[in-house]
Image: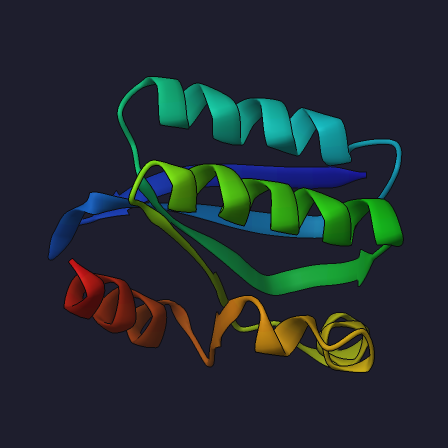
Length: 118
């Protein structure tokens, strides 16, 4: 199961943060993508996925991250991952997604990087 909440930072209201908790797998990755797509349709083009509390990510979850990044880049936007830890960080490194996705230590670092891109 995955749970998440979304919020905007006072110092960067143009960036949406989705705080992911639990597992990102085949059962729920499409739900996350639907939510990301909804935010895109609402005009959000810069999203940080806070992965600090994400415990597990499957291949479907990895595919969802790539799909989100691709959609946002096509719109001139950006997606960044913040704070992946443990098994999630290991998987990202093993499949070399750390070379494709923008991954940062925490939300503040990800915010600074996205703001610099604009």
